[in-house]
Image 1 (cartoon, helix red, strand yellow):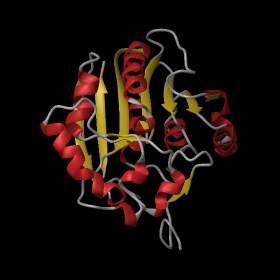
Image 2: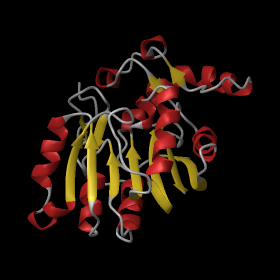
Image 3: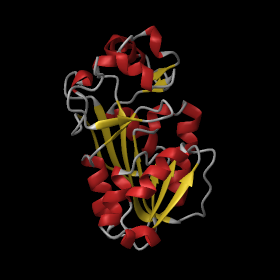
Length: 240
């Protein structure tokens, strides 16, 4: 069985942290466009195989590409054009615990398909650090998963009931196998933190960000067997 269809546009990561896009999607491209205007370096958290980093480098940005797995960074480094190699640094480590930067160091921060792998305390710490690392008027570009995917559809009623009763972090799933046997679970860790636009907005707003865009949507290139109702992904762009 082909998990991602006959003509996949994603590659599974080597460390069970989901999959990476073969081509840049909406939030990657928005980050790259803004990064082109930044006088400071930009940070790509969870760079994976490098769709966002490569797009930003193409626009002339200076990028620190972070990923949990060295193999991903080596693969990305091999894809960087010669003329851009002096504008990129590969930085292995788990966000947020392994990363440390000076205050007001980055002009922009990108995080696609990363935040939903963080526990609530890790997420809160990570958002706080992103705010600290950004220069004034710097922006974060985030994409994360919502519960509105085929793979998590049995969790949707739980998520919505938790929201109604004001449960903190209602999208936190400690064991995915309680709600799903979808074949893509083989590429995921056991726990996941799902969001909708309201949740992700409140999380960043509470740390001082001004929200510019927060919406649920279906990203370009999402595997067909994950599509549910047009709300599969959450996009957030927020300014310090």
